[in-house]
Length: 128
Figure 1 (cartoon, rainbow, N blue to C red):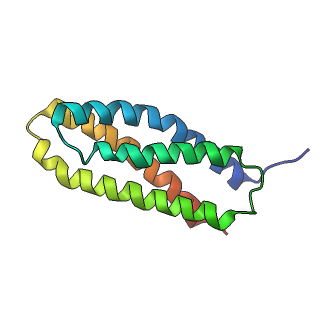
Figure 2: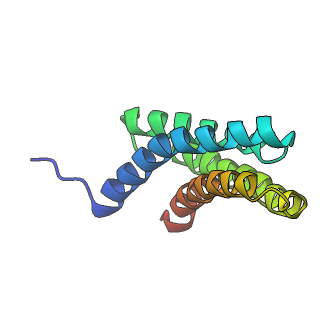
């Protein structure tokens, strides 16, 4: 029986988390964009969607070692892109504190971005 090492099993679980995490992130950031007339926070949907697609691609890949540098580079790019949108949304958020309901919707959406920041950051930092 072919057993996977624990790191590969953890990576698989984290990729599934990014796929599932896209749905609530999208559902919180899109209404926030419509109701608040802001663009910065909802642009985080782009790296979240790319992270979900990358999660699907990494679950479907057969050869784990052949294109390893490319996969690590994609992880690093997604982490940097997510971090950029996340920091920009946090900087822009104080101007939206007047409406507390909108602030909560935006905060819940950025939580999904934080999860999508941690998962691609985990792979390059733990790769050997």
